[in-house]
Image 1: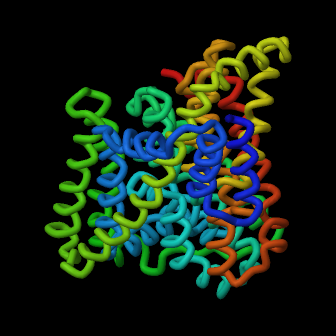
Image 2: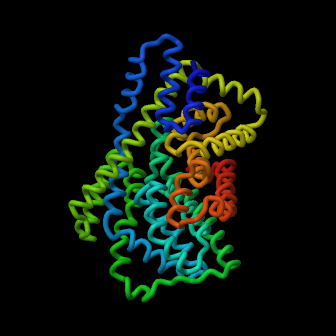
Image 3: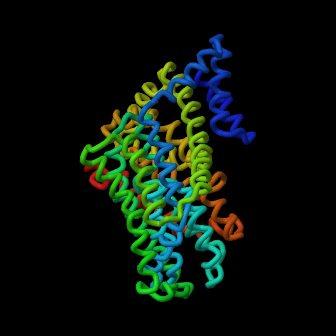
Length: 418
């Protein structure tokens, strides 16, 4: 059955069928060939939706959407410009610092790429940044959002691999900052070579003092989330609901820019994003059920242990597979598909599941700005009106930085295990 499912799945992807539907088509074909009733598929689709921790996903998405429905994006850009705008290539540095701060609010690379890209790329081009380079900065820096808590991909990995979401959130902070620093250095070097301008905030702190102080409550959201989880005050699901209440208070009482139209738009966007994630969760659950029934994870773990003599070779092989898969599948789908499978292999070589989770998210986030399916790549290139080839060429040093961070967290457990 597994062979039939994989064959149909690959064929569906080849003709551009959406990933979730391709998974379901593969499972349906396998059940039909084995003579099992389709009612089994319906039952397996329904089962993963009955998970209380999964409620954290829509609530964290809603909290981010509520926070970004008003002027917070403008405040965020002003703070970043005040802090790093005076460096060479200041607007490029603003994009990266903005992504680090934005990640603690949205947890979504796609939302980051759209919000910050629309705000900064036109200004960067007006200041003389090549369109491809502006798109490269935005598409790569937006992936920092999937490491800084609250990260939606880390929540998904924790759910499918039975790993503590709190541990994953805490472990994601240092790799996220490492990636941000690496991107800072890359932009600085390119800016020096291309003599890109400085872009300090006009008027400085005095002119924007009120806006800067207004942004602080929103920027404290990741501190609130991590602190509440770390000290056991509430579960991830409860914290996600508290984050929505926090966002309502900050936007409604502090910023006073939350309107009923903004709340409605945030609710609609949350429903659409949640629906897209849920159908992938449901489809991947049926795939995992079928693979487990066929003992594929166990057999694969035995084969890996017999084929590779050293754990470092297994880690290298896992990274190569994830890099390839990440280039063709969206990040949530890849996490849900590979997570349970790779956890079994990781246990066979003594690889900590938290470290594996960070490896997986960093790895697959590179696929977000890698052709042919790079989501943030296409969003950024469209905003910048740059060619994909031009953008990918400008991305080369950013790929090197991401791979260096991936290498470090893959082979230095202390960077992700506390």
